[in-house]
Image (cartoon, rainbow, N blue to C red; front, side, top):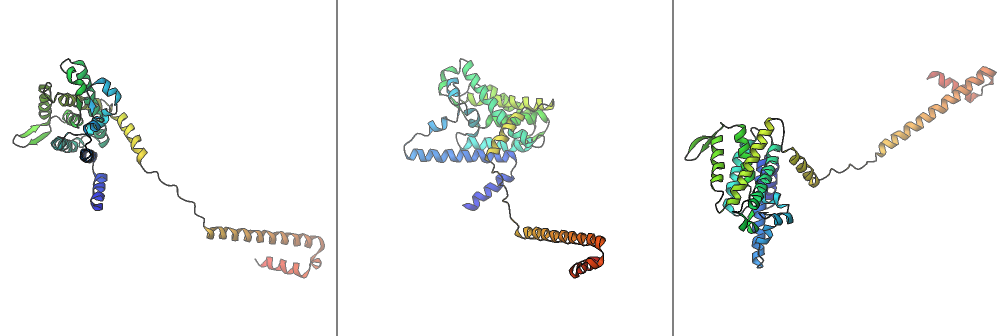
Length: 298
């Protein structure tokens, strides 16, 4: 078990940003599923817990849980929901990184999710068709974020060939138009909120790619915030402890003693020379003559 966890950690660190996003989505899906099982074992309803992180359609409900604009894009309803979203993220995330940077993908994932959630909130509070169910409707899933990545890539490389099973080769711009067109056609279906969010994400992707072509990066502020938040969880490097090198201290002490002795000897020779000038050689003692003789040989 420890080996599996270690392998997953290493794969997460080595993976590109879209692989890391897939890991995060899958980890959250498993965590939510396991939490739901535990709660059901104690006869505790798990739906209320999950709704705290889903995007509400009701404006008053959203005011009470504004964090949902970020958390909903990492939640999924069931296995097929997350499977198809992660497959699209894997395919088009890899394609996106051929033309844009990893930070652009991370920022656009959040930008697409935010725009999709806001358009969903706006539609359910503006159009009378949705008002009767607004108080009981919630949005979850990474579809808006994924559609933003698809739309941005299609805008950047519209004629890029995509090979589809049973269909053959299709240019990316036509695939994007088909997906967006289907979302428009199903705006009043049972999953209307999901299709509205898809359109919001796709518009965010087009907006991002068009703005980047003019030199303006719409994801820059998102990446600045994301980097600062990530920095809070990075371990700070420990300051190295000061080491006392006793050998070096001993060497410095030896140097100090040597220099002190040399200065004392120099002062003594200067004194003897002064005496020699004033009183002559015969005035010197035997010890002074010896010191002068030794100094002359150095």
